[in-house]
Length: 398
Image (cartoon, rainbow, N blue to C red; front, side):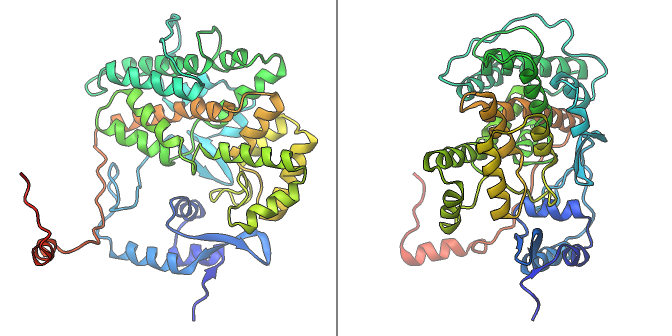
């Protein structure tokens, strides 16, 4: 009998793929993964899922079209971001290295592949939005723009770059609760009353959250862009998806876990209680970074954690066998800087908006609508009518 769980090398050999492809399958929920009980820092993969995926690959006819989807597997060609060699690469450049000095505007120009500076000469003209917190104001701002801005079809790259810059600046102003001058990270820092070296932590966090290949929110933004929707609508699609608890909403779970540890005063007992309930410890491990999330390391290296957060990190690592991920790093940085509870999500959404727009612009250039096919597993055509007639349940529309 074949083993239920197999090693990374065995999984790669069976699928005949590169490590990043295997990790992408895991991130999309196509292959189950668990820690190796004999070596917690290693991972084991579901042999059953791998066999099923391998069989489906062999049943598929033809190659993946450059601009299309591969019958159920969201595979898109992109030159923006990739994950490899244990790192994150923006157009072939190390994102961690870029985070040492680059601003979010620099990353926007890089990821948007601009021939000009879309931020140059922009006048201050904040959109008026209302809402009790940055998230509500961001949704309001993007919804207003999505309803009023023109479609992206038939417009020049110069105009789209300029509009992208305005959308990003307006989004930051909405998060700040009012217009502020300066670079994007400076505007956010000023709204949180940060000064000196603490401002630079905000810049670093924004740069490291800017893009992460074809994640769920980015895919949503690309789907919207493929229809010709305004750039604000594409960003709104991304923001809506980011709020999910399995994506950007995970920062709220991390914050809750840290708050519970503080309330009980016993980090180990709090973590063990979660594990005994099957809840897991949020903020640790990432399927695409078996050796640890480089974004989290880069943030932690720039901002020494408090004794409390260090204890949570150490116990979390020991019990999960995994290093902290970006969600933990954003929450830890926000707590260390004394930021509001919504700050981790604000940093995530503002930074990632650059990536949403980059992918939207790339998808617009493809000129191809994203329309995946469904793998239908329901009743055969016509059989449903016969069952309804037999049960007397068929109702004709009035």
